[in-house]
Structure formats: C-alpha cells, structure tokens
Length: 412
Image (cartoon, rainbow, N blue to C red; front, side, top):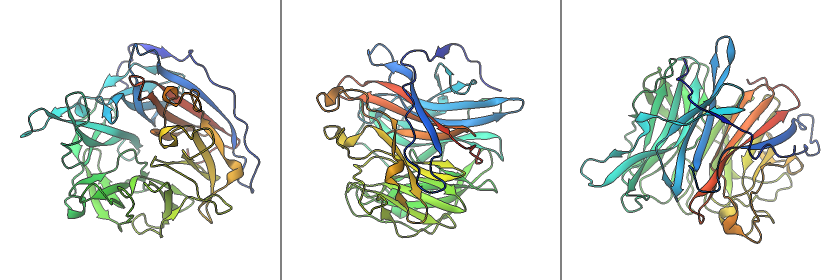
C-alpha cells in the first residue's frame, strides 16, 4: 500500500521540449525510437528550494492499477556532498510526483570512534524484486564532516541497502557483507544497474580496490529473500591501471547474454559480455561502428534495453561541450551492434540537451551525467538525471526524458 501522498507536484513548468526525430535506420532492428521528449520535474535554478539529485526510478506493479513509479533521490549542495536519501512516487505514469519523503534507514549517522564524522548514503538504485514483492534499494556509504565531503576521512566504502515492503514501509539499512582483501578500501555497486535472474538471485557489478587507485570491476551473484541481501559467488576481476581504475559498472541482460559497461579514467568507457554473469570477455573500449573510439571523460554509462534492440546512454566529447568539465552534457543514446559491441553512429540522438550556453558561459551551463534508466511500460522508457551548477551555489533541475518506441517493448 502506498504511503500517503500529501502534496502533488504538477509538472507544468518548463514543459516538454520538441520531439527529437529518430536518426536514419541501420539494419532491421534500428528505427526503434519514435521520439524523445524531456521535462523538468523539480526546478531550483533560482536557489529558493532544493536541488534534487541522483534520481533513480523503478516500476512497482499494483493489482488492478497502473504501476507505481517509485523514485529515490537526494539533494546536492556541493561536490560529492549529498543529503539523506528520500523517496517520491507517481501514480499517473510520471506526470505528477509526490513531495519527497525521507527514508529513515538512509539518514546520516555518527561514526563510532571518529568524533564529528558522519556516515551518509548516496548513489542509491531501487529495483523491484518480483519473487518477494519488495523494492531493494542499494547504495554506498560515504563520509561527511560538517557541510562537506570528508576527503581525508574516507574509511572503508561498502554497499548498504534498505527494503521497501509491500505495505510501503522501509526497513533499516543493512550492509552487503564481503570480507575480501581486494576490497580493503572500497567495494561499491554505486549507481549500477543490476540484473534479476529467473530464480530471484541478483547479479551486481562492483568497483573494488585495496586502495584508492587502480580499482577493478567484478560481478557477484547474490541471494535476496525480501529481507537479507547476500553475496553467493564472485566472478573474475577485471583490471585497469589508469587513474583510479574501473568505476561505476552497470549490467544488463539482453537476448541471452549479460553485458557490462564501465566508467574509466583514460578518456574511454569499456564494455564486455558474459554468458554466466561471472566470467567476462576481454573488455574493449567503446567504439563507433567505423572503429573510431568515443572520447568519454570519467562519467558513467548505462543500458537502455528493448526486446528488439540494445542501446547505450552516455556522455562524450563533442564540439558543443568542449568547455564543460568532463564533457558533462548533453546525454546521448545510440544503438549497440551486439556482434561487434560497437555503437552505430547514425543512430545517435540527444536524450537530454544542454541547458545553458556551453560555449560562452560554461559555468552557467548545467552539468549532468548522474542518471538512471527504467522501462516504464511497453511503449516508453525514461531517463532521469540530476542537473546542477557547481559554481552557482549548486542550483539546478531534476529532469526526465521519455523515449517513445515504435514497437512494443516485450521486456516489460
């Protein structure tokens, strides 16, 4: 049962932009995107309210009713400085959203033995778990001191989770336990898409490291009984020496194969595949279909899946964003060739456009790239993103793109 929705947030301001036409078809499974519209869900460009960030949505089935769209979100007030995680919900296919409500299990808490240090939670991804009729929301621990990210006080980072029960209540947070020396500094599933297997087990991808640099990517098969989330088996380590290594891996399953996309710090993103979700092919950089590599600057990528095609959503270097930090706008989408694992250049479109004058006023142009994707129904998928202005007192917007399909998505 949905917790009471007190005030409705009507989405009339900054209404949807013009539909972006689909690019030219490429092969029999291209031309799947009918159009893309975008809208603002929460607006704090004037600084009078809250800049909501890390918006991630899952769809919760309800007997005799349309699915409930459940969003996790938290405010941003500085670089890597996030507030406690809240939830909001929509009962009308994302047209209106309830006012955000705090999830108590995701509040900041004092760290014993470290005076003034608080353990917060960020990067939370909720996903519906059909076998238990619950929502599993997984994030990671992060440490704050005062009104800032505690850069010098980052203790071991690890995943934590809360569970939303079928009656709408949330459990307290628990740790996804893993005692492995390779994860002495960090093991994190932050912002990562997961795969729920037919038996109810869950595949997750993690960034792990014994120290801050040279982190690896690794996958784990986990059990979940509606209360406890636990690692059953761990796969092969995928290594990368540049910078901090491999970060924020995301998973999907499509046409009988598992896919992983990975953020890196060498101006590339990487992709690999697996038949069992634990042992992976050699990673390869994201390339266009003509072999040219995409320039990606340490920003996450995520999967958009349709029964008739596999897509990637990402940021990259472009003439329009050369003055933006890490090329953090716009968000693009392109179709993946599953045979070559390359992106089909002529299917690329903009999902969420640049907001501001990126060439003449980069500090006044909103950064994006912390986003999530959900298949809302058979006809439409959503991309939600937190936009913000780091040099303008963290003002910004929470925006959503609707991707309309030309064919029903049989994965929903």
